[in-house]
Length: 400
Image 1 (cartoon, one colour):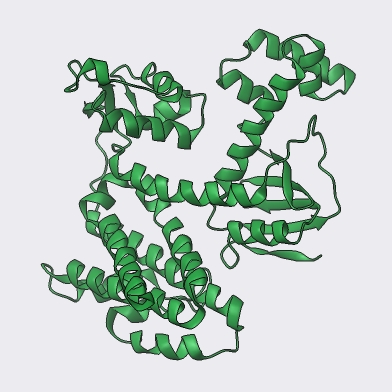
Image 2: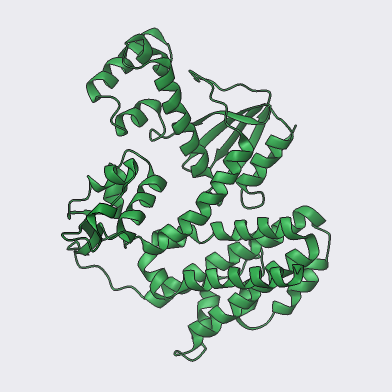
């Protein structure tokens, strides 16, 4: 089976579904200019995953972060591992530091986190090498791929809600001195308790993520819960050196430009994958948007030489009245995105509509994480969510 391409045109969940339904055995390689990961399959199920050029997913580092292993024991195990050539997991068992079941459980968590992280990748090349077996895999942990797809998709939705609450990256967090809740009602998960123990009034969100042994998603989910239950509060910003004043509107317009162009490209690519590149039905429908500011959102591959210029887009936006130009732009984009999603439903049905919605949801994650405060202040996320709800309401009314 020959399967290769780019995640801009075929999403990671779609690749997983194809390999699962085909009951394929082999290794899926995914890489960008800085990262490379591999996911191994056996008869359609995931049995192993690894980061080729990153230490963050290595078994030893995972055990160390989670507090299951001391640094001295890890160094001793690594030294023996290099001497004997045996896998690190096997070496840890040989040293009586862990039993086989403990290593297997940790490997399962490690594999899951590697795979779930890939759901957030918006670009990168992929290649499936059929028939290959994973190298350096001490144990094979079988995960049902369809269940992984469902959980990964759920995490995308949950991540969107979490990002609405998380503070900006320069904001300090502390335990609330007097939580406004009944103490008898306080319940915390183990993850929340672990994160709470790191909150000391002197750490920001990125620092808490770095110190946490549980990975970014689980840590942010715990912080979200601690904030919403008023156990943790923000206490001001860290003193920063004076920085060059930013043109906030230009930054937001740049985020909007790249975000919505990627959304429209994802929708067009999905339709093309069902109807073929030569089909003109979607192109004919999209032709109505070739006027005004919407001409800068043609649904082309963002890296294409034919893609619109950000600089020209900014000039066009700033030609509008200052007080209303941002509102005018966002209202037009909201209508365009909603109408395109509705058209996908009418053309290809509910299942493909759901895939289109899931695809565009992924595009909001990065701008929210990178410039969270600015994006929220300008309401970029609210516009995006409102658009999806509008499309969903229309589809539900049609189905009745």
